[in-house]
Length: 110
Length: 114
Image 1 (tube, rainbow over the protein chains, first blue to last red):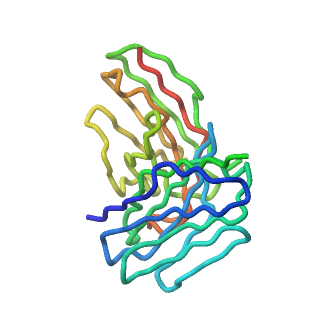
Image 2: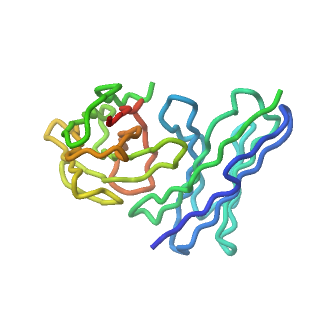
């Protein structure tokens, strides 16, 4: 079955710098890759997603890249702000079941 | 506000007891998912229902069961509770049955087993 690995588990960056979180997946049939953000005390919320027919997608300060050959995808956050502090989860699916990464705690240092 | 509601917000109970968590999906969503999140842990997928039928099963213990009713709300039943069952339980809903739909998460139910 599908397995998703996410790194790093904790990431601390200076406010204004960029942050990158990486995920790898095992099932080459996976075709949907969402990223969810979980703020303290809340449920996760979708922030961006990408499908396998696209290599990159951007939405303001966040972007996701997908390398199907290497089976990995990454979340890029530029010009980080205090409100970016949260836990970020990647996931992958082949349309049957969504498999989640273990999460990355992003800390933005003032 | 995601539109998904969960009750109760907090629940404190003793080992060996049974509890029921309730979830109302967003209007129009037919799928309901249940997740368990222990302290500083990731999301563990438990089970998915679509339009009243079980669709996918994750790491759900035999002591746990769920159902989705005709009005699409769902309940997660946890029995013979153990200390290790203490966690946040999230419900999420989505429009379709496949995994390619955005999931909208509720605020969670925090269960404490003493």
